[in-house]
Image (cartoon, rainbow, N blue to C red; front, side):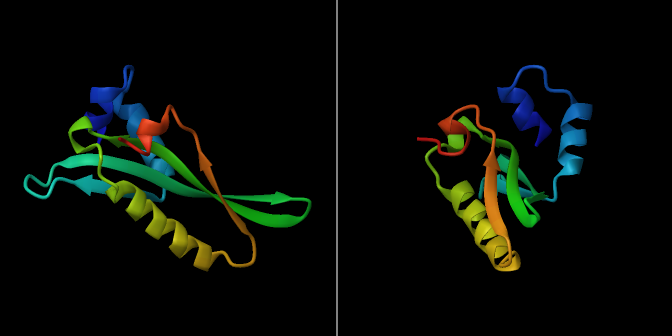
Length: 111
């Protein structure tokens, strides 16, 4: 995962990457079927908060990258959607938001 991030982002350090990864609860991995090499991933966590006494939750998408050779596939979006739908069922009493910090649409929708 670090090698993929390092290929596309300047200034990545292994320690910084692992510190960020350790904060996350899930990592969605995309693997090439033939080589089983990681060709994309997205890290995820739940943020809990309270606004005016009401609980809320946000699915936070952290580091997300898809190798250029795997662009055009919707597998990451499908896996994320499955996770989001599962979490909606787990948080029926509050509102579940999606908190995404994006460098650009190609970080989550490559075409």
